[in-house]
Amino acid sequence: MRRMAVAAILALSGCVSADARSQAAYPPGYLGIETRRLDDEMVNFRVAMRHAERGRQLEDYAACAAAQYALIRGHMFARHVRTTLDQSGAIGRADAVYLISATLPRGVATIDAETTVRDCGARGIPTV
Image (cartoon, rainbow, N blue to C red; front, side):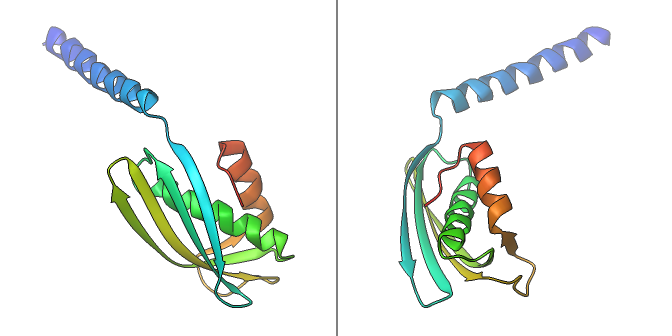
C-alpha cells in the first residue's frame, strides 16, 4: 500500500516537472500594444503575446496597458468594459476596452492605475 502511494506521488511530481519544462521551453513573449482612443474617456487596447498561458496573461497585459495609459493622461483609475480573446497557433491576441477617469468609477471591474502599473513592473509585464 505504501509503495503505491510513493509511486503515485512520484508519478504526479513527474507530470509537474514535465509541465514546468514545457513552460520553460516556450516562455511567453510580449509582442506589442496598439492603443486607440475611442473618445475622451474610452480607450481600446489591442495586445498580442506568443505562448500566452490561457487568456489570463493577455487580459493582464491589456490591464497593464490601460493603467499606464490612464497615468499618462493624468487619470488615476480605469474600469474594464470588455475583452475579447483570439488564439492563432502560438499567438494570442486580446482586444480590450477601458474607461479611464480621474475619480474612482462605478462598477466592480475598476483598477487603481498606480498600483497596477507598479504590480505590472514587478511581474515583468510591459505597459504602454
